[in-house]
Image 1 (cartoon, helix red, strand yellow):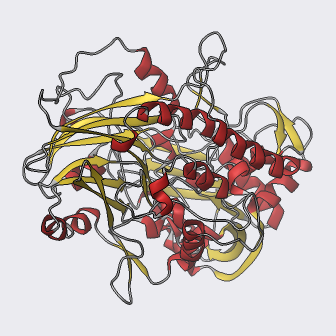
Image 2 (tube, rainbow, N blue to C red):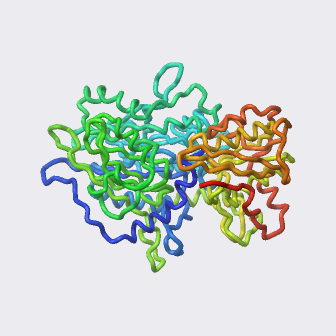
Image 3 (cartoon, rainbow, N blue to C red):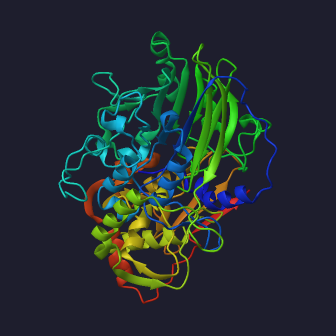
Length: 576
């Protein structure tokens, strides 16, 4: 249910604007003048059901980007005239953590939108000339394997039907090489699909971040294992070679961060030497078989367009195109028809501007996608447009240097006061959007808390509270700072890449008793050990309560209008 730490993705949209404001860079091309075959791959990642407008790059009102009708228009324009040699790839998290306009309809509108991009060959999803393929991200497992199978293969949800009756599922294949049934050892989904361009095969192998079990509710993936991404992909290469396949595109729901630029792949910017956190990608790519030519990445919601060497020392093109349909990777491939290998590759990360500076549409919105969006907005409108409260200031998820955020404290307060507990905890990855100043609707609050988690109460000792807070640095390179209510604490920063030390925890200004039992509220995702917070599983007397958004709605209705965020100051950071 949770992505990369929120600190990684905070500046993604601003980075889009920055990348496109850069002077044109001088990039050499990997293309060779020849009679080789040409193919195009258009990759999106981390769409998260963002079928409606609402994303803005930078501060100017006219910098609107994305939405299903706009993204569809860009993708169709990019394929114009070369439809038979173009493929659209979703690199995971197409659904999940979605705005209410998609999520309240079980993300069916998002799958229906993707179906509008499918060609006639996709009537048989595994057909080699079907133009779309997807892999799973961690969020595809938010509601468990059963619901994932339904969303892919079709069938009405218990609360449906929604826009389709019956719901027909995805008209394109989902593939994943490293998601397996523990009992049989078989992959949950086909591990790859083979597409063809003028009879030459190209394999598309999918994989999801292997730490998915730490990001979703355990009960939903019971009996499923997530294996090493590189090993799973490499294990398929002999089988593909035997089928005469030498052009291989891997698409992996894992990624990092690279400084953006606005031109095609710059061979002077090798991935290994760029600033940013690229270790999750370089670790995988450096272990991939020499047959792998392109790796499409995701998960961190950032920019990537660079070359990195695989295990055979060959250059692999690695891309990622931000998130939420605000951009896509436009990848050109050149294939030698005799060797059947990819001999040229280059990419550009294209922003899906919705408006020009004069406020007029940057592209004519796609009619089929617009029709689906209109139907979804009509269906959920009475619910999401209901005004709950108002606020005079932006309430942000952005954490201060100690690890607190205004929004985190607000939601934690709602949970604590709604359950009458001593303390409350919420993970930052559970907060998916800021609250803008002005009227606060139910839909706005759903965008903050889209997972439908239950609020769970339990008893923890004071010592367990200390242990819980210490688990924030289980991965010192990527701390996960819990948002809290009812307590304050001081921690020591021991330096980059080192575990923080919790010095003292207080309740009402008095140090908590390590031997005493305290009532605690959290969400069921954390209660089952999500995000690595295993101490919650030790809590006694666990009781499932109301849905988190209902608790937040009730709390805000009880505050004066406009309400003020509680501010920060509960956590003190010492040291470096």
